[in-house]
Picture 1 (cartoon, rainbow, N blue to C red):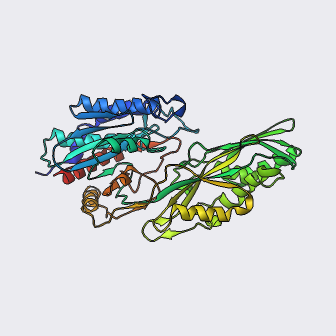
Picture 2: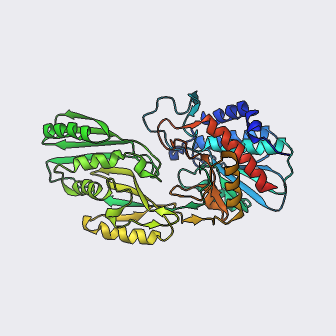
Length: 467
């Protein structure tokens, strides 16, 4: 019997949207200031996890909460276990939204909300795919779990805990990227470039510099406050700077104190060229003027070695692998004060053929003359690749081709998904080749057509893999 997967999704789309909106209304940004033993990454992610598990319990599935860090919704029986990994935590909202990020709304057939595309929408689509398989009483020979994390956007503490305490799936996918498939994921590592706090000796004295919310986001906003002996000259130059660069901003002067606020464009840290980094643009502007001490070094290093260097060429780190693509670098967080010193977080996404140690050695050599300290951040991940000849990859590509009429092909990305948790794990949707990528950006959305089409593909693919 040929199953009309699209029709089955259509019959459930009202319920799907209601459940998705329930999740989207929850502010599930990790909040370390509110962490408790009962809420290990803050109350928002915990609330979203509990809400998702409650939906599964309502529908009659076996559910389990694993320490308020992760959980699963289970169906079927068999020796083999398939895992479908999604997450309910979201990145901070930032600025520039036209609607309330946690009041989901449908405009022009798009759902606007933080998490709509990353990753509450796709995870809900995968859940409804499982519901369809269960509702139709289709014969399966394996067990499947929708596994839900709460810390994907930060440190993956959720999955560390889950996989230490629960059965590790034999194979699976994560609905947290794009079609036709992601069977290669670059390694990830952040390095902190650290500066002393002295700021004396120039016509301008840097009091503070701040940009960025997370290492894996291109900073949309940047602010600098400084004492200046030449505020009129700086103000005139700033007007010219705004005219010739893809940023917006304001400059205010109170006596000798100057405050500059700059607005760029946020983007996912795996593709820094898609954004406009307000932090590096602001540093490149200020570097034209005379600052003192390590504040001057801070601005000079950013302007000369980091600004527009998405491939890290000026750090002698440019590298391209024929399968997994090029190394990329996102400068995600900038801070400087005279008392605490300065720091720039450089988030690298690197292909096979590159190592963390190699990046660190070349980074230290390239920046040795600046007198800075290089420190490795946490949560590093090695490159991950599943062969295009693997039956998992072949099955998922075949289902994609069947539903879209487009040729499937393997892909590698700089983003890190839960797909890399399994030796035979990949990422699969929910963005299509013609989708607009708004992950980690203001006005994040998922198109209704994409959401429903993904759900149909997930149902078909999960059934093929569970037969």
